[in-house]
Image (cartoon, rainbow, N blue to C red):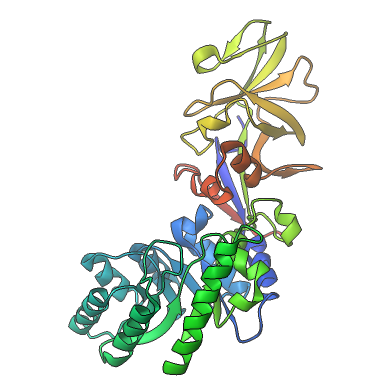
Length: 376
């Protein structure tokens, strides 16, 4: 019997902490780091990742959903939490119960937040969002944004805390759209600070934090870099970031395949020679996307072996070659992670799948248990 789980995501909280310390080195002392821990900490675990980020110097946490803020508040009694996403009336109530700051983008939304806060005897803290070019939530007209700021500042039922935007192309070096967004935001941010002294102005994501010091202002909001994922979709080591997550399974069985034998649905892989094939009890039900079929590798005993055949919901096949010396049933198999001189990154999967690294980690299923360690 293997000592390993059928599938396990192991998260190094020490890496999360060190990544935050590395991000803090980019910032002036007066600029605060907000760790974005939405979507279960990008698949790494929301509360555990938040605690490690705080140890690394994060002074704020940010989420998308009110339920995420509520979960965090039970763990972190006094830390500022910003809920950035759209909220229904019921979700506003949950965010207020969590004493979360709320992103606001329309006059009627501010009015609703103010009224519901008054009902429960709480003064909601709001951050007005300016759509500088992402094309999602937020007013596009800078004059309308200034009216929203004035509305929030004048309404005694709410407290105006921040002004923010989000970049669409900060991860594309030399992007003219990013430059235009930043210019629009800085122009309004300067006027807003004059109208509302003490306003927390924040716009930088991980990519902008690492590439654009002028975007830092009073606070930066970092997501992917906190987890050691490269915001520029290349190699995290080039940004002095440490991937925090490993995804592992184990060798459940090893079978001899004659030439012409097949593995997996559709017989999309047929053994070109006599070979040995390992079966790992992990599949797309765990987050190993079917699009990786025949297009990625696995580390067993620190050696690379190709994944072959169509990925099933619960199993994958690995071609060990005709004479896999030292490979035995029960051995660990690493799908994302490093062993010896070899490593497989979330960025490698992302390039193969033509997606982004944090879709890879967010896609690791809930049935995969997360275990936590703290490597020095």
